[in-house]
Length: 99
Image (cartoon, rainbow, N blue to C red; front, side, top):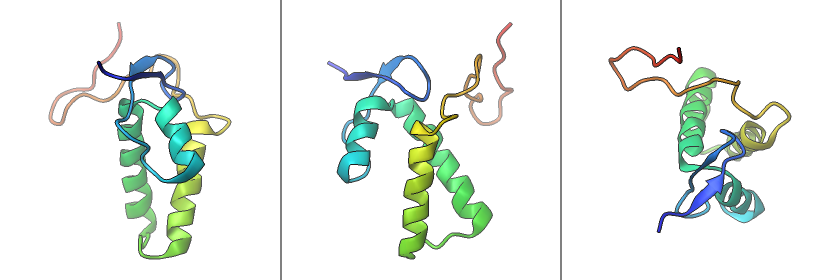
C-alpha cells in the first residue's frame, strides 16, 4: 500500500516520499509532511539556485544555504503554491491550463 501525506506545499493528500530525503529533524518533517510531487518541485528549484548562483556543493556554506532554502520552500511563510497552480506539461508540450 502506498504511503500518502497531506502535502504542506500542494495542499492535498498525495503519495509521500519513500524515506526522509535529508538527515535529522528537517528530513523527518519533510518525510511526514511533503509529497513526492512537491519534492520534485524542490529538486527543480534547487537546480535553479545552484546554476543561477554558481554554487559549489563541496562548500559547507553552500550546503547550509541550500538547507535553509529547502526549509523556506516547504515551511516558510509563503510556502504554499498559488491557488489554481498546476505543474507544467511534459517537455515539448504546451502547459496545461484550467478552463
